Amino acid sequence: MIYDIKDIRLAKKGEKRIEWAAQDMKVLSKIRQRFSKEKPLKGINIAACLHVTTETANLMVTLKAGGANIALCASNPLSTQDDVAASLVHDFKISTFAIKGEDSRSYYKHIASCLSIKSRITMDDGADLVSTLHKEPLKFNIDYCIGGTEETTTGVIRLRAMEKEQRLRYPIIAVNDAQTKFMFDNRYGTGQSTIDGIIRSTNRLIAGSVFVICGYGWCGKGVAMRANGMGAKVIIAEVNPLRALEATMDGFRVMPLAEAAKIGDIFLTTTGDINVINKNAFLLMKNGAILANSGHFNVEIDIDSLKKISKKQRIIRDFVEEYTLKNNKRIYLLGDGRLINLAAAEGHPAQVMDMSFANQALCAEFIVKNAQQLENKVYSVPKDIDEKIAKLKLESMGIKIDSLTKQQQEYLASWQQGT
Ligand code: ADE
Image (tube, rainbow, N blue to C red):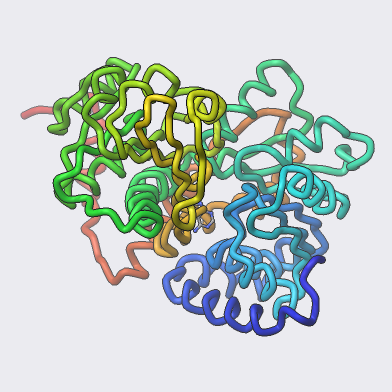
């Protein structure tokens, strides 16, 4: 644990913010009440590598209520909320290894500390914990692991690649692929929190700006929707023809990045791929262009090339670095190219993390009950868990819906439809 008694004031602030988020995590809270009684995770060691936020704190408390022993580390060097980490240690007695702005060495040291609890279950966001565990399986007792969960698109892609090469040593449930996760967290969560991060770091007016979004997956769609709603002129750069078509019919301009680069005011990457905005694009950009990333890793903007074509670099505001190019144009990089919604803002709001983390908690329970039947593969979240979370979320929002009559059910199940 890295937070000591001097951090009590920080912890108090974190404790109240954790409580604030809890008010909007009604599904998780319901699961916590049941876990407290039934203890489905009794004695289970969980190594969790997640963004250390108020929402994550509520998940950790839920798992602990279910009887788990937890060690938590950050899934990104810039996303930790230090007050939350301090409170988890002081108030909730949960081992937490994370500090905002940690360097790469500390980041991996903290992952190793987290793995030293001899985990039965891993809970990852981006697959750094799982890949570290697989690189040193003996040191971290991989044979002890019965299963894991993965929170995000990038992590699921990495894990599927491990499965394909038959390198995966235990089953993992792709929480990201639950409908109650990606349709809300990736879309509405990323949509709002990314704009929040851009605004908090720059205080720029979105209305009237040309907002270029690279990638029209669920995250890109969410940001496009919100930027459009705030009056931006949204341009989408996509490589996938279906998504490009979808963006067009959703009402956005679609064009190659090389064209968008000349007219954009704000550029955002949400692709999960490497060097999406590169030297060619930087050189075409207008003076004052702003660059941000909302993908998991800081690889989408080619920062090395940006440095090479620059003659000067300085921090001009928190989370804003000014690069003066050799052609005298200035380009502004936000949050070191790390996910801007967590670096400069607070990540997705609790209302959506409620569903993502309800999936995490119920999948941990599912693993404990079903590990013996699972192979070393990446699994989808069981449909009944996904549906149950949707129902609970609606209930928590006071929304009632209709249900099919017996006759309607039978009609849908029959091939003799029509008259
Ligand atoms: N990922 C995106 N937003 C998050 C949040 N608020 N907490 C944890 N993980 C997140």
